[in-house]
Image (cartoon, rainbow, N blue to C red; front, top):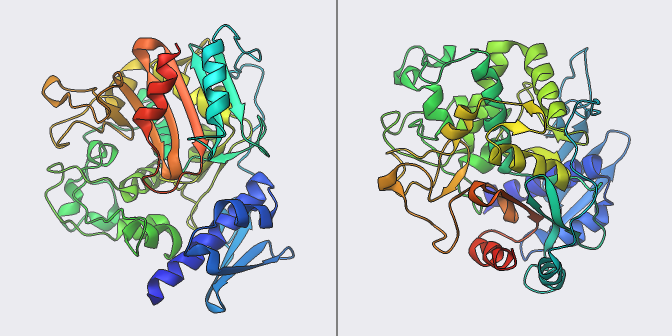
Length: 416
């Protein structure tokens, strides 16, 4: 129980700290609206503006503190050492960056009525919802206290964002999918056989537990380690690389660490900023670990419309407006499953519903069409349905395993 309380206090401190400084929502509102469950509501928080920190304990027990700076975002336990060339991970869009049409097509009146009603019913914890046909918005709605300017955490949708932008470096021949010997730390053991393809498809073979409701590898990495990248790097092999799919935020962080080392800090950061600028992201924040590695598993923040740009680019196989962001073959790779996934429900940093190999045509959501899903904690979703030229973005707070994708998307599709 002691370790669980330590992790819980860290989660609350990190969440409050990052949310306050990135979204500028009041701390008391965030605590009341976002953290009011039976366990976390016993936490007590104090805020120190002079050091930009939030300290949390459970009735005074096992205090944890998160610090915020404009380079890393929220960092646990002690401030990060800033580089001399510090910068805020927020970009202003250039004239050439993509922007969605401001107007909303009102010809889909049934959709407007349905979703307007559902905000106060089944999806009462939905905070932002966009439906796009092509690049045209056919529905946009926000719950009370949120709007077009609100910034939302993507949680594990961050994996799909980074998985997509890695295609930029693949096009530039910075890497090839089947290269191994990825890290100096692995040169003397069997981990040297892990390839970038293995990491992208989450079949590295590294020992990993992705449970969120207990002390596990993912909670220790994000909330109780010196740095996310060093923690993921330390995992030992549990099976032959490539032999089995195991969902792992550690694999996603290792990809980010690989590219930081391959490119160097300056190019790593500037390439990502330029890519997101071209994708029309201008209000985003990407958090880093203490080493300066983007936490590519979990910590991207953006507006609902910016998340919609990602869905649209995936639907268009890498094309957004008049810009080709990545080659279409990269998106095909992301949306293809492989033998190690028992039911074909995962590709490369994106979830699938009926895509991939013919004999892996299982659909987790049998009543829904083939699609890719960027999926994050607490019901963050981007549904990419290429055959209907449809993108759906849902952001909110639904609790673990409390969001019914099939019912949600199915109701939308009945009106289109």
